[in-house]
Length: 66
Image (cartoon, rainbow, N blue to C red; front, side, top):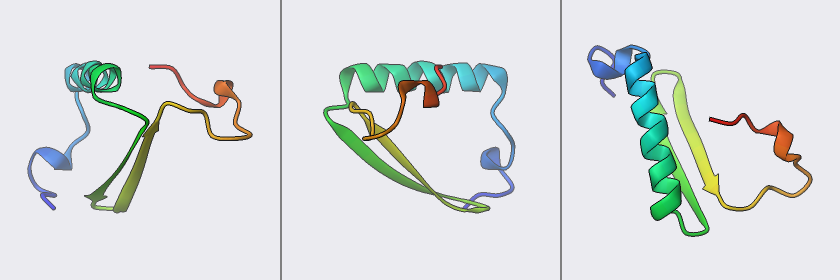
């Protein structure tokens, strides 16, 4: 894991806007039913689940819009 290069600092506002736009595009054109992703960070692994369905028993209001 590159803890001294580009991954060692938070996203700039411009980078976050690009991330958000690319994620929206991915969800609109690439995501079928779900996608499970894992990445390593300096603090341990992070697990990401993208899904087109709301988990049972979860209110839509529990999610932050972006």
